[in-house]
Image (tube, rainbow, N blue to C red; front, side, top):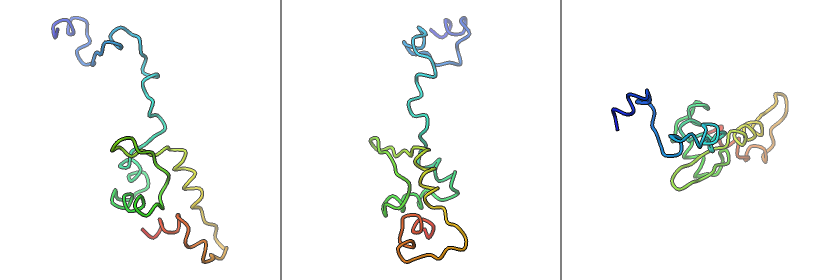
Length: 108
């Protein structure tokens, strides 16, 4: 089997029955495009994974999708959450505004 792969020049690629036959293209296999992991979110926001965990417990972070034990964030939902956190200078902050999810996330 290894000698066959070397002869075909495919030794560095993983061959599955479907891809070996050319039935599935790469564009069809990325069903998680547009989603990021908790680790990727933490890196993008410059926060620790523990902070993201705290936000999840307190329900103050961006919306998430749970698949088994994997937590994923849709990039568009994270962007919407960030936009909802936007503050403008010169506006007074009321008590209700201070208790929003975004204000609590800023303190974490």
